[in-house]
Length: 232
Image (cartoon, rainbow, N blue to C red; front, top):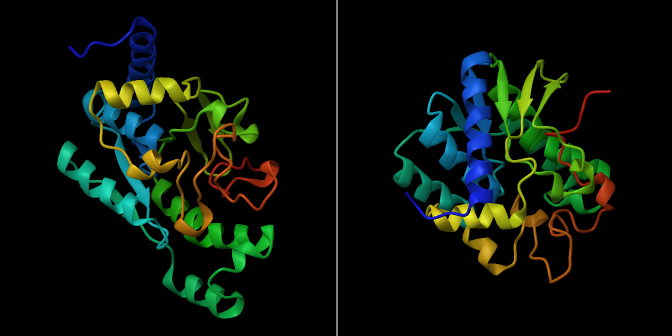
């Protein structure tokens, strides 16, 4: 077995327990992977310990080349299919025609409209017919996630939502990736802590919040794409 410290081993066991619970009580379940560092940890754990859980990804059409590279690497490494969902082409065409390709820089409303088309609507299709979905979100990622539970009812989609890595630190994530030689997005080596669409993601500098590189022109309180906003 790979040499890991006791603390990380305990965290792995906790996630294995959550995955077993999901398979037993909330199948069919699906995992939404963006191929970021956390998601690669969870993908590795699912492939090893809960292969019954489906894995899918949202291809917004504006992802960095490095994200497609790790997608290809993961497919070869795990030898399993990952479902890919794309935005509605007509909705994208209408948005760009009316507002321009980069209107999301102009206002939070335009940015949320773009995320709605490229992410939120495809997510609804991906979750159709499922009893649970999993994310790689962690509490330490953003102020909007500071009280993130391991399990919660997702009213917006009508199913259970799990974040098995919620209490993992950034150090835990990278210790796991290195210990088990897990493929990861090479933009992380260039200072990209959180990776989304190419125009909306930048590298961060020392001392900046881990999500500072996402929609950096907005206030931290608005920095969610809509995938994880609770129904009111």
